[in-house]
Image (cartoon, rainbow, N blue to C red; front, side, top):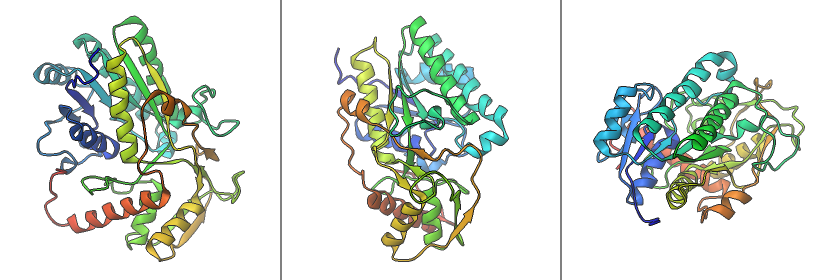
Length: 342
């Protein structure tokens, strides 16, 4: 098998946060890329001008069939979906509809079109509240919120489909994704986003009065939740390497954690933002949110053994610096025409 063969890749949700970084990583690597996004949370400016953007829904099977045929799609990277844990507790059926049912439609359309490679944006929320940390892939999957269940159900659909059809897949279970493209081509742009580092950067730039700390009574060293933060560009690079692995071994499917194996508490992250900006953030202590486990830290041994993945930005200071750089660019773009991601 020629692993240098670069098939056209359809990126669902490619105008969103992680998807737009994957588009850049694919383009930088010379892959032909196509995007489908309904722009409910994504942005046109996040998709480079040279990349075809189809505005539509992944549940639109006629549109999918046309895109597959028109662009000769050979692989799918699936990022489209809803991602807010507390919202999933409040609106579970929306999450099962958007994340699970629509993924089923996308997988079925891929099988129908003979597309043989599928990379899925999964989550550490599939593990729920594990009994131990760090978390390896053989840790029992016991989600504690509808978001985690919606993603785990899609993983199961892919596993069953791969047994019945000539399709291999890689499910990448993300830990906490943060940061932005080092060249400020794209970043987390959603208004009202709940990602801690983005919220903290907005507060540091005066766009929020304070940062809410949800839960100070967890069984952690300082009482606040501990998470494994991974730079979004390192995560995007892992997707490209996973695609190369699927092409190289068509009979092999994979499930892998994406994290650095190091956890930081909420207060540690806020302290780090203070150091980067030399300005103390106002912290507002609040109760726990529904569905939040105390600690989620990855064991990244499998991905490091399976892929030639060498993270470039595995440093909290760097992650925060890039996130701040993107927030400053967003401020500049407000009220003006927003340029393409380039």
